[in-house]
Length: 301
Image 1 (cartoon, rainbow, N blue to C red):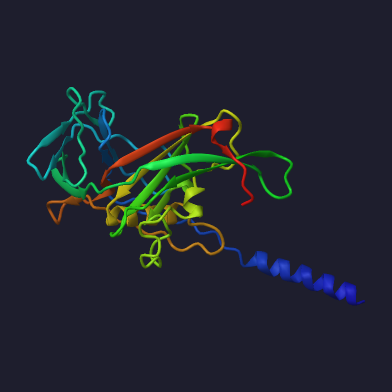
Image 2 (image 1 turned 90 degrees about the vertical axis):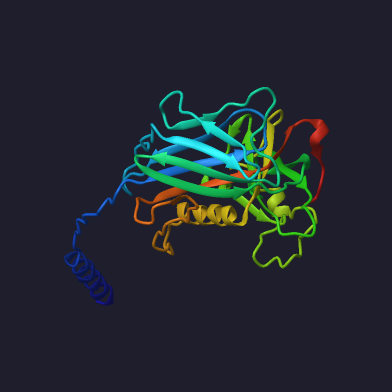
């Protein structure tokens, strides 16, 4: 009898829940199209590229359309101007060096200037110092404690620049392929987590979680080649990358309402169309290592 009563109660509860289901067909306003800027200049030799696209509706999963026919220049605080052109008319604006010239130089401040569809946009960024990467090592490990699969965990070593607050972004490549999943947006302040550091990691070796952040979902295998890039970031760019990662990984039961990621791309006309994206001047240091006996270490941790 008890079993029958419980079963009957469950049926009534399910039917009650189904009867309360309401389908809501939301009509979302897509809003005006805005200019989107993906622009990072470095102190590395070779060409530099700034990509311009146009924003799309929130649920539009297609590739963003290129923002073509814009005028793009970058100038520094020493009076030099660099012109970018879009040779393929695809929204990729490129500056080509002459001889061995490089665009970015540590300590200089750079201003991006864009004229597009009658609007003028500007952004500014200073190129800060970045330490070298001393080494990359590999340690043999299991994928997890219960797994039979073994491979190699990578770890890079760098020492934070002392006596000042320094912000960095870490990027890594496996066999030439950039590892760009949301979890691979790696930023650090003074080689630590930042925020609550209070200078604890200033001038010291990067902490272990940052050093070991250069590992993909699967372990490395013998002869894999790993390249690590360590780039300097101004404080506002650190905030941009941190908030961007938060937004694109914002899901699950405890997800918060999405918000706009900050931008430093400003329209000179306060009443003109706004822009999205970010302009960053970043000094870059790289190191490459292969999973070979010379780089493998035996350690208990």
